Image 1 (tube, rainbow, N blue to C red):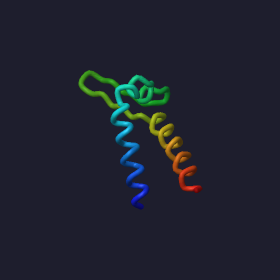
Image 2: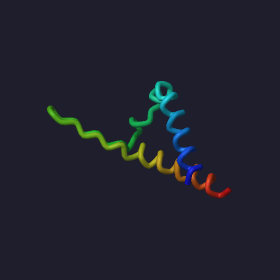
Image 3: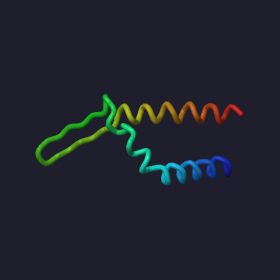
Length: 67
């Protein structure tokens, strides 16, 4: 459990430092993300972005837990 928490902390630290570079990628604006814009209302649901992140994290954790 300690190894997992330390690893997740390091990953979050790396993502935080690399955020300016990562924000240039099209995540959050993928085809399949739901955006509804009205006069006084905007609803945004990142469906495909969430699925893509879930798949990538699942594969990474599966490889990591295999050891």
